[in-house]
Image: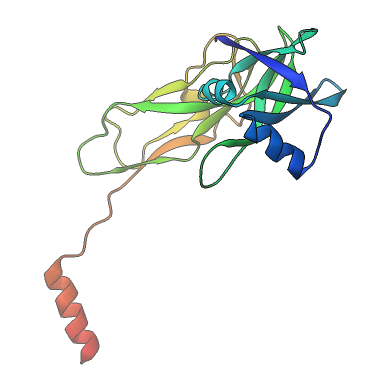
Length: 197
């Protein structure tokens, strides 16, 4: 997993007005917390942070005011619901070698058995515990040839070395649902006539 280096500045202004001014300068208000330390209020460059957050569970190396260096992973991201820009981000402080619980996206590959069946993602992301500096970007699941009624459980998914499940191993991650039989036009018309009579 790659590390993204970002320069952070501590901030002393708080509230909506201060947050608006920060965003006008193309920066994002951020709170860094964890390890029992007091939350640290920072600003980060908006564009660079947006690019970093495209990678799920990205490891961010923070250079804070050129004085201290910390490692963090994103914990909560607030975006503007209409324009999509970052409004606020919570970062969780981590240390090298430390285990953290994160959700890893589940990527599906392969074709289902013929018959128009539907694939349901019960879990879009799989909760796992992994070392903070070695968080897998995703897990891949093959659904090749699966028929209606088949399901893939958490225990069926191969995890990278060093990662372990943080969810019940029998939890259903993906299941195949039978295609719904479509009502034909003729049956529909007969049904309407019977209802009118």
